[in-house]
Image (cartoon, rainbow, N blue to C red; front, side):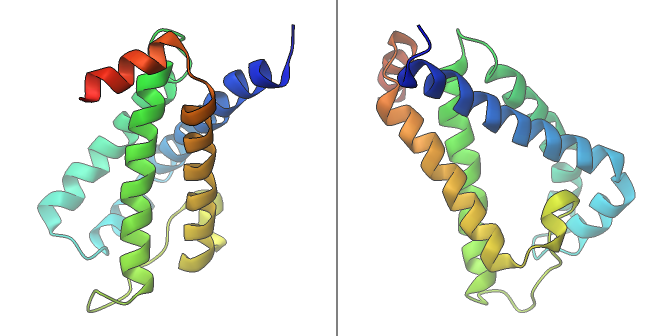
Amino acid sequence: MNSYKTITKESIPILVSLLFVYTATSKVYDWEGTRAALYNQVFPVWMAEGLLWGLPLLEIAVGGILLSNRWRAKGMWFSLLMMVGFSLYLGLVIMQVFDRVPCSCGGVFSGMGWELHLVVNLAIVSLIGFWLAKCRTPAARQSIEGLK
């Protein structure tokens, strides 16, 4: 019963969920550090304040959605959107599109440079893409049809 497809179908969303819950927890645990890091980014202050509150809530919500069989496919699509968006931001930082290079992320990712962080993000994007391509469940088909 524990075929490769079943293990893949269950483990990738759990790993992505753990990633989101970990990043949310690390942001909340080091609230002042997170605030300082967000205010040091290249976007406006009003956006930093919104992200300070919104990102941990969104990450926890998506982490929970990924654990629900009913909502998992939509959660994976939303995870893909979030990870691609952040990867694009990392790419812009690496290409020095901005006037200055902001500080890096917190938690376990704080020791990484921007390039390595982008590689990790793209690996996660690849896992999510693999799951979406290979785990074609009725819920996944509904998610795809809902995007049309």
